[in-house]
Image (cartoon, rainbow, N blue to C red; front, side, top):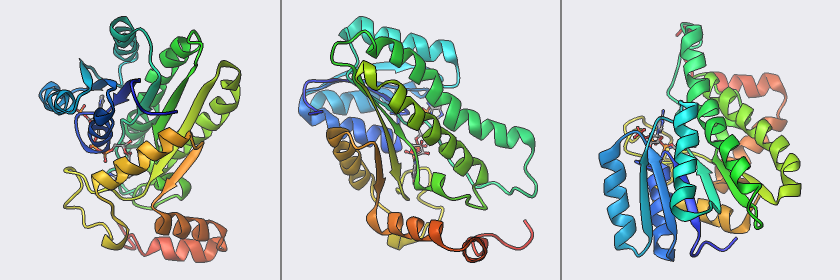
Length: 257
Ligand SMILES: NC(=O)c1ccc[n+]([C@@H]2O[C@H](COP(=O)([O-])OP(=O)(O)OC[C@H]3O[C@@H](n4cnc5c(N)ncnc54)[C@H](OP(=O)(O)O)[C@@H]3O)[C@@H](O)[C@H]2O)c1
């Protein structure tokens, strides 16, 4: 889909990747609905969007609340009449020791990464089914969803769940012309994680990540993985014998957490 003069909803748009994508799209005369919990951050992003020639609508809400998510979709439609593209982007993958994790630690992350997506996905489908041109629903997934990373097991699992659900949705929603995309970045440096000491050879800036995500939206690639070097690393790891893969992955955790 070309990315001009579209109505675009982005969740988790107050910082990081969501904000960077919203700003990148704002150079193309779009109408951009940005949502998250921190209103002042959203208002800052809205100002940049307006300066760049697009219209911004700020809708504050908690993506974990099903009713708030449905209301945000409704308000976007009331204002702009349709939604052409949605980027469901809320999520996070903090490190967690599986040796000491509680059920709540793990469920909390599943809610943040999986339910936050589902809460927007369903009302968006209901809307896009009524639109003659259908629409695009994209999800910010992660390369971490392809491997069980020992320090981020809960995150890998939640992103893998999102990917599998969206694989099914892509087929089920084709008759309605709703295109479902899974976008899987590697490490992206954000305000939140810049001190986490990620391996530099593989990190990307927010601008680079936004550039890739716009490319994925434009080309409507079903599953778009980036950057290339890390994608190849993950592909290789997945075909290695399990014993070797586990040995490599175990280097990322201390023997007792
Ligand atoms: N950074 C990376 O290396 C990387 C790599 C692969 C994938 N990803 C994925 O990219 C997405 C964005 O991550 P990011 O790195 O850009 O993180 P970020 O800067 O922390 O952004 C997360 C966004 O989600 C919003 N959010 C969090 N909880 C929310 C809630 N309950 N309700 C509504 N909004 C909520 C935050 O806004 P408020 O706090 O204002 O609500 C913020 O706008 C995530 O899905 C993440 O898994 C990131």
